[in-house]
Image 1 (cartoon, rainbow, N blue to C red):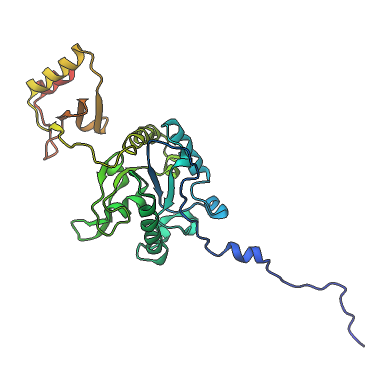
Image 2 (image 1 turned 30 degrees about the vertical axis):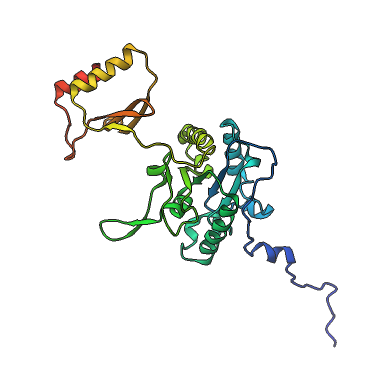
Length: 288
């Protein structure tokens, strides 16, 4: 007896779009889209594209990019007048740079392309967003165990310098480092620092030259000098900038500046980890 045939036929097909989505898609660096004349010329460099960036093939269009653009507007920077790029123009797995090797094609070809595009754009300032962009500008260092390490972005955030790393795509360009917007979406307290960095970027983006470095920094003033300076700040109601190193109960020093050209440091921890001041001297400083 002949076996009856089923009325249903099953077949497995893989749509073309499903196959294509698994393939890496290059997200080209973006040159300015506005013809409006602005006084600054800024290139903004991140680590790698997000999933949204990859889908549209345009950098910084995802949630983190939208955050960044809102901060740029607050700082008086028109994003359409800026260059946007990434160290790798290929999105790694989970959009995480740790899933790429620095010597791999994704990053090395990305750096070559970035170098070519930067030299076409000729920015006054390159804004480095995140650890990957910082590594492209500074390279790496060896720790005491001779292990290769990446410079922490937190140690360089807010710093502006002339890149002298010969193999960097940013060689001989002025750069300024800050946190990547994707990091800010997880660590809200750092947002005010980035807003301040972008205001500095707006200023530094208006000229190519590095600012004068004739800063007078007193790193070990005497207690009488510290108290006299604190009294002058209070008496004259001076506007100051403060940088506190450490945390509550473990403060190593405070840096104070009342002008762009002069600053002093009040140390609290000695090199051996003990107290820098006698109890009486520290009480004088805190009560001044």
